[in-house]
Length: 269
Image (cartoon, rainbow, N blue to C red; front, side, top):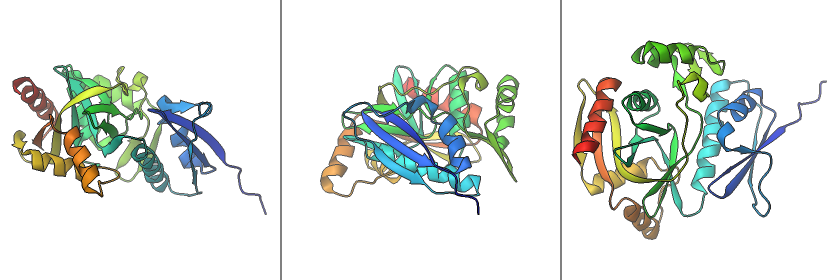
């Protein structure tokens, strides 16, 4: 009987916190070696005690993909004095803004169109929000599903198709780690920015935007927090973090029109 493979350990740091992940699962190893390269380090800095996680073996890439995503979501949720939010983010008009929505609503495609129109890509999966309204995108390399390719420019489509970091599924390929060389120099940016707005993205027949009340904005952000506020004190902290943040619901029919609508909304605010 063959001995089980020995686990490989990786260390990661972000915003003064450290994570150590050990696994022998080949699918998890592919993800850890590529998608999270921007936050990888040789070892946790001296005096920093990392959170340790072990990922079990699995024969299924999708299971490994979501397990690794949850590991890093939990890691972000444990970073002190910040709320970890599932969503993409970008910056334009000297303002950072978040895009909230389901995993297949098209946030990454929308962010790439926003970048083409002059916005700065920050991240497409998670961001951390401090009580003073400062946002830091978690700098994971972007991921994209093949059905989104026809919605992108030809040059960007070809660059993505040439990326080797993908897995095949019945609905097409999933590129799980797109470096800048395969995104026409689009790369994540984890530097602090001031959050000015959040857009709740929903699929629709026509593209348009509507303003949300502060209460609905708070509810939308709470719903997408990796660790939801469980006390009145923590809810009050999140309310303070969003005190100067405008909320909108973006009804999205196609990403190019959606990107123009987002930028026009920010410009007019």
